Image 1: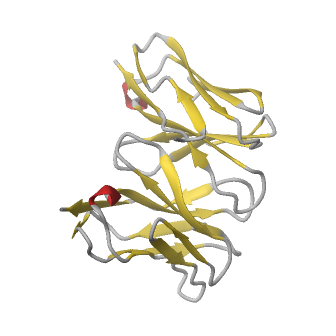
Image 2: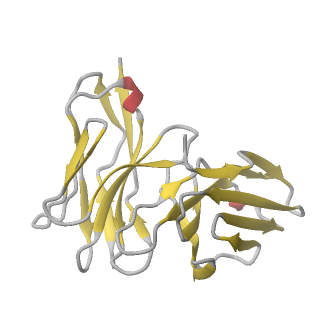
Amino acid sequence: DTEVTQTPKHLVMGMTNKKSLKCEQHMGHRAMYWYKQKAKKPPELMFVYSYEKLSINESVPSRFSPECPNSSLLNLHLHALQPEDSALYLCASSQQGMGQPQHFGDGTRLSIL
Amino acid sequence: GNSVTQMEGPVTLSEKAFLTINCTYTATGYPSLFWYVQYPGEGLQLLLKATKADDKGSNKGFEATYRKETTSFHLEKGSVQVSDSAVYFCALGSEYGNKLVFGAGTILRVKS
């Protein structure tokens, strides 16, 4: 069982829809991450939150909008996505500081019609 | 910049065979090193880690030693099982900030 919980596990949406992905952790971690993973590829970092503030945005298109309501929750709001955005979206969390391992959820499999 | 190079797969082995997956890195400073495993339909799980030169990380029969002189962190297991079939990612933790740099991943297939 993973300690980072992501919902939903699967999501199918049209290009005009608005939806949100949710992530929750109760390990007391103060850094949280969103990654995008295409099949047979390593995860690509999208966003990093540190102490509930956005610290890294890897030039992600504005149709992806992250939100960190509190230290345990991380959301990713989706709007007007493109077919190439279909992927596995992974959330992770870690302690702050150098060399801390990240703990991943099982991801949300997103399909854009 | 920092980078990680993994051996290409897929690697196909028979059950009980010896496993080595090579990983080398390029980095400034003294990064932490990790191996993650991803089973089908799941997220990444931390398999093992090492934080300084000559550290050996180990877990579930897997081992890797942080070799600064050869900038390597090869993953080994003495006797693989069918249940070890997965994708294995070597990763480097940046000395600054919270980023991980991943290798391309190696698919392991174990046959019974």
